[in-house]
Amino acid sequence: MRIRCMALAPTKEQAKQLGASFNTERTDYDLDLLREYLAIGLGYWQGVAWVEIVTDGGWLLSVPLFLFEITDPKASKYWEIRTDGASTTLWPPSLYEPDFNSQLADDVPSAVETLRELRALMEAEAFTV
Image (tube, rainbow, N blue to C red):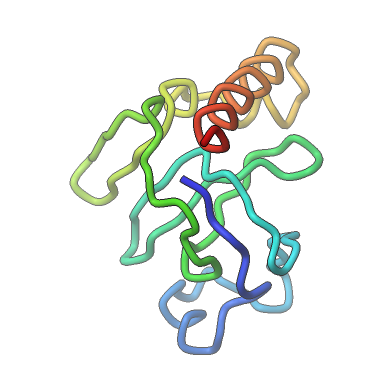
C-alpha cells in the first residue's frame, strides 16, 4: 500500500480523535508533505487507523492514516492480520515480535537487517508496475 502525505499534523478535530495522550506541542511525525511513502503495516486501535512507515533514519513510525491519501490501495502479500478484540493489525510477522521495535531502536544488527530486507521486498511489490 502506498500513501502520500497530505498534512504534517492533525487538525483540531483529528487531534481529539487521538485522545488525551496526543500533545500537539510534543508530537512531531517527521513527515515530508506530498511525499509518497510505503505503508509497512496498517492497524486500527482506539478508533483510529494507523500506518507504519520507515523513516529516513530507519525507524518504524506509527502515523495516523488521516494525514495521508492512499495512492495505491493494494494490501501487501507480506501482511498477516491479527486482532485482540481492541485492535486489529495487518503487519509483516516480524513486526509482531515482542522486542522488534526495541531492537531496532538499539540498532541490533539482525533487526536492522530484517527491516531492510522486508522494506526491499515490499518496495519491489508496491512499486512494480
